Amino acid sequence: MAVQLDDVDRKILLAMQEDATRSLDDIAEKAGASRTPVWHRIRKLRDAGIIRQNTVLLDPDKLGLEACFFVLIRTSEHEKTWQDRFLETLKGRPEVMEAHRLAGDVDYILKVRVRNARAYDDFYQSLISQVKIFNITSLLSMEEIKSTTELPL
Image (cartoon, rainbow, N blue to C red; front, side):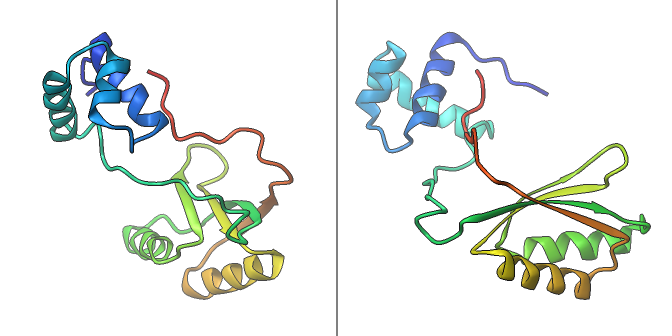
């Protein structure tokens, strides 16, 4: 269920999405409100689960993680035990940046960040040794055109 936000809440969230290290005074200025009410609103937004965490974004290329693969997975297994094992396997793989269960012909899509094609093959070999998978299609991203963590408010 979506939480109702007013304009001040949206301004607070937009400012924090841009840079979560902003000072409370700066966020209050961006929101057009005073410091104490903004602090209370932020606390309520955290308590409501709208603000899940504060984090930093790292540059994968500068860290040598230059290869981004999108991995399409089809499975013939749809039992809970298989799914539980698959999900636990994914959670234990730091290369998996995102994982989504899909409707349609493809069951899952993963976003995987690794150093290069050899590192991806190591990931792939490990994955198929841990979980039975019917079909995997791997797509190498040639260029990241847009990437954001900011939600449209």
